[in-house]
Image 1 (cartoon, rainbow, N blue to C red):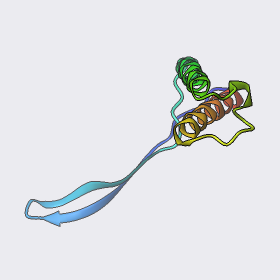
Image 2 (cartoon, rainbow, N blue to C red):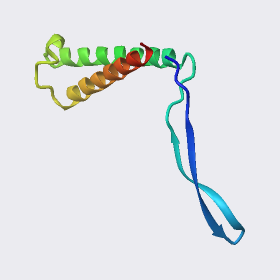
Image 3 (cartoon, helix red, strand yellow):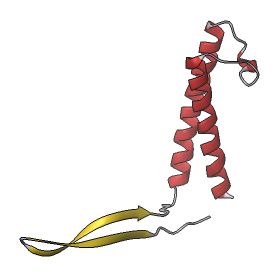
Length: 101
């Protein structure tokens, strides 16, 4: 799916000692999708997901948890943080996959 970018900038006019000036007051970018950028982003996200997943697995084993049970046990603060990071990365990847189809 090829998306086109939309750039929108609003100006407010202010008067000062130099006269009237148009000063950007709001800047918004709706979507800018360069060809190949999804692939690069997806690759980076997959790598980061692998790193976080491996770190979570190691930390769980070090604390006596079974990594396969990460969805079913109450995790301590540091483990919960890694778990949420992993879930957020997976959701971002799923979102990208939805854009590509």
